[in-house]
Length: 214
Image (cartoon, rainbow, N blue to C red; front, top):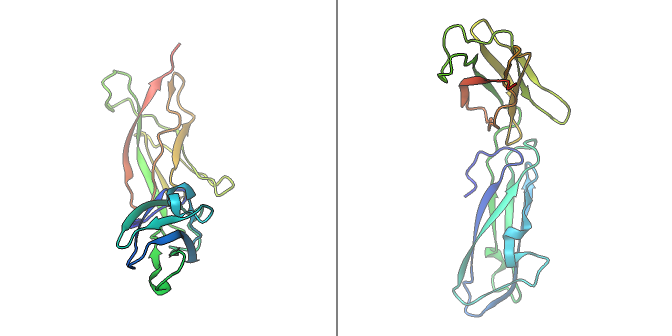
């Protein structure tokens, strides 16, 4: 597993299978996953279950295999795709040389940008579709970016209610866009989270303004 490419703060699944190739039980088996280079990978340690180095370790009968579904994440894309060494050890090791495996976790490259574009309209006739005359011009569109300070990308809708937010830095697993300066009587608000990874999945949005109740 761990194909990716992944973003920062996104769950990264890693499948680990351990087999006892010996003819005696393997006891007190514990495992670790340490970044060798690249971005630093952290783990949800409960996913290591009985392999957790802080526990008593696992026991494997001769020939027994067991698969663990580990979950990790990287706090930042800086440093590039990490290479992680998964290492399992137990008592009375017969062949320590076969106890480790290096895994490359593919990340979206640091510095990647994406684009979000579309049209906003006020559904005056209630049909749920943009109709000539319903376009919302002059609305401020904002892609909220914190890295860690505010580095928002801002533009304004044109006469047809269209906007294009270009050069949005990717990084975190979720990005939001919102709108300001919406005409009185209508609201757009912050839109559902988007996973921006540089592939341009959000360039044909149609966003409907809601009437302000009351």
